[in-house]
Image (cartoon, rainbow, N blue to C red; front, side, top):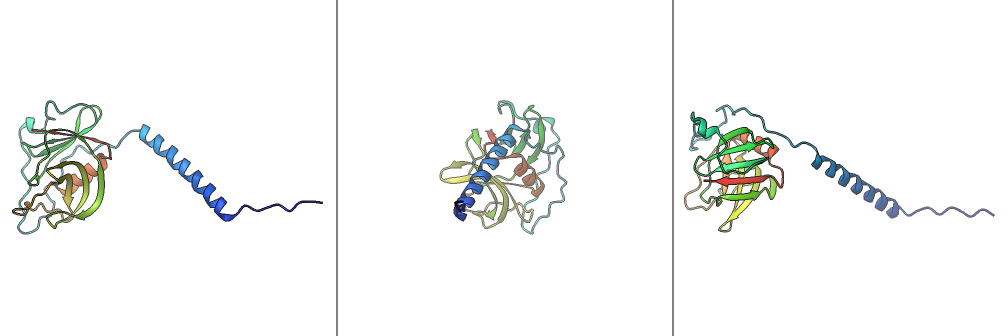
Length: 193
């Protein structure tokens, strides 16, 4: 006499499929980490970023070749380099060549010189100064203030609000998009004088 086949309950199927999907995603993540990382374009953005009334204009790019050169003692390998004195960022690939460099507008609280890693990325939010920002890349905390790169959604670069402690390092919209593509979680950020 044949025995009736028992069907597996639906929760068992869902659990099995979910576990399988997690294994596949994990394997693909490991494979992606072993592959090449994106590089940034080597072109300077045009000065066509929109500016709101009352915003300060973008700093003019320096004609000095030393301003464009990656600072000495900024480490080696793939990294983001931020110069406090020059108010400039370099996106440096694994071959130690700067693929993109641009000026930035720092907040009122600066990170200490040193080596950091990108710890958190956030697509968009409102900055502590009330400006809508995007491409937020956090890498440090100084005196209780989060330090992060970002750009204003409207492309403006307002000066920090008087009396407000801000750690946002703002940049032009195109530069924010390039840094977002380059600066994955774990990317080294070197801050130099």
